[in-house]
Image (cartoon, rainbow, N blue to C red; front, side, top):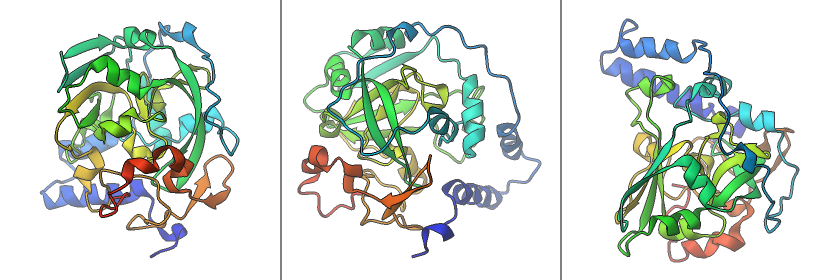
Length: 320
């Protein structure tokens, strides 16, 4: 196993794989696919941000049941260092290009194994629930960590609102599809739109959260506005941003990265220091704000809330 310092950055590795895949398929630098790569790095002005209809709801009361063991990460660090491949595999570029997202109007479709399929306006959905702030640790599969004050509501409330049928065993969250603002979605080798799923039991857990804001105001576009999933005991790639669809299913679906590279990314993706990524260790993590290295905690330190969900699953790799 290579040391952390010798591991190729995730975005570099995946870009290399994508390029090789394109060449194997006969792509040349004159193809539209290659031109799409250039568009990712072209600077286009973001639309003027209109007033957020829910801005007056923030800041919201903090739920002090969930305490941090470290300082909050500065907001600019959290906003400027995002994995948002819909826009770019380069984090600062993705953060900048995400600001062009048109997040109103926005609707969320609820379908699958539910009493009645419906489409709900995001502002009506946000106003339906009492919002609260929760400070959570966040751990990326790239072995860095942050601590964020998310605002939103318990995922269990969304489940109750959807009224799933008894046969529903999984919940799949799907993000937007719009290559006119998101040039990364022109990359045909990725299975857009982004989606991932969880068991019903995971979604009903008290930690599972739907974020609509952070740092005392509506969620920044780069961090997944207007709605994203937060399950703090899982790696960040399992937490879809900018959600437009919630589906209730009876069979386990494959998530985005499981479909792209199933030998490295699997369904569970629970933070586990004892299960390395195939190309680097997960035993330690780097604080994104301070650079401090610290030991990784099993389930990102939330084991007392979630460990019981995985009893009897010892035969499955919880990372993969």
